[in-house]
Length: 241
Image (cartoon, rainbow, N blue to C red; front, side):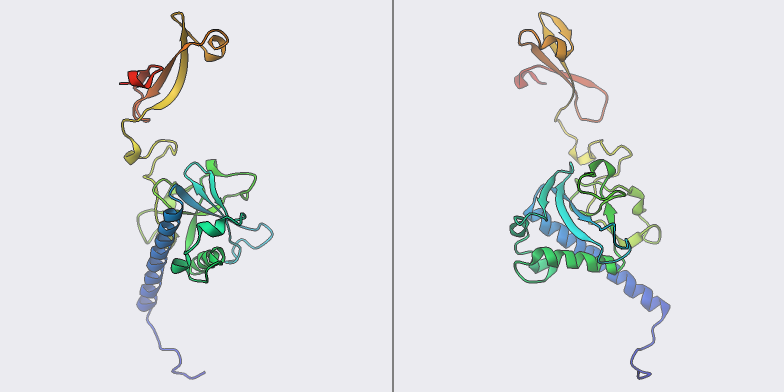
């Protein structure tokens, strides 16, 4: 090989090139997320699966599983031929040819991983034991309704944790209690927590009272889903404050 084939570079140049590559990778992940939510508006996660029989560190040990909502419900199953229609036209983002969008998407995700990108893990309480590998399912969070399993993977400092290697284009506001509604979602809607039935002026457990006549129903809920101030709502929505 010629001595001049590879020009010399400084550590600073190499570091800058790596940083530029990772920032571009994060931007590409954002473009993929936007394209998928445009096709599946309620999507929150692009979930992958791995093969436990293969080396976990292999870049090719990554396969498309599904697109899921914020509640973990499968919206698009990549094992279903109907997924092809959902991904139609995605080649403008991930390359490839029409009709092979799923493969092109997978290839692009594998390339991100091979370049050092790190995917989040699906939250433990959304894991489906019938389809997800034990130990966690890699995922790309597609919308602000999605939560990561590990908040601290993004420390806010690009020099700590996974830094700019973390592929997290969107994320709900951090909460120590993942079941708490995100701040921007809190409004005047009511979250029903308890149901008490009243019959002939006597309130009681639904299982007991419902055995008799049709009762009046009293919903007891929290006004914003976060505070502990209860609000009693009548059986008719028109009676709600």
